[in-house]
Image (cartoon, rainbow, N blue to C red):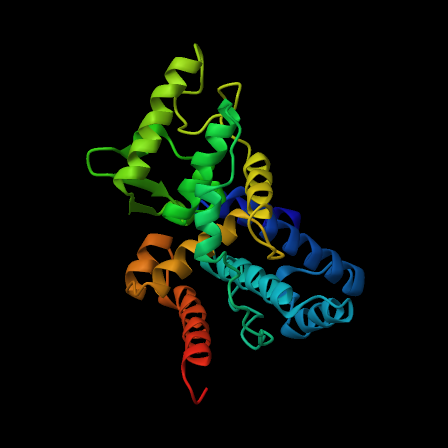
Length: 296
């Protein structure tokens, strides 16, 4: 089955243009599935795999206490894989037709309160070094644009349009979107841009954000940076770049931003992905009502 998996992985990489992380997840899910099938049923052809085989794999995952969210992701991987096999005429029908995904309890996105974000940029001290400048700017960009970690480390200098005050982002599936930025954010980026040329005789000119050696930032460095600075202002359990993305979206919706506009800014493919932020708004309204209404 390895050749089928490798062919599908190449399709995800080169045609769908999925991120390295997403491709690896699909690959690992499929390898796990086919190892189970071979262990239970021996070597069989792709066309012999039935929905009952898939259900037995899902039952084994459930017995290992895997969450419904993780199982759903694996079901999604299989659906995409078998859909691809139909597309290239390796199968006449998919065994996924009768597979039902388990229900997931919706979790509200974790976000940082506005007052804490104010503390971060007004009172937290960033070191007076190149890394300190970079750390502050990347925190500002995350909160002001809601972009993903992979998008931030790959921002190139030519994607920033100072005249129109915007950043062009290449997101999931190679989709482009343009995010407006404030005059203050534009000035901060421009200052960083100029300082980079003063500080380094040689640097990676393609990328906007660079480390103290003038090289493109590693994702792990950015993740640890965000975790560190969020740890200074909030006690929430999750402290990651994605939390700042949630924070950006939640603060917009709480301030009355139209949901479709938030969807475009985040680069979501469907409104359903964005609607979760309205729940945070409702929770805020409930809190206001509870504190202010005499009959609450």
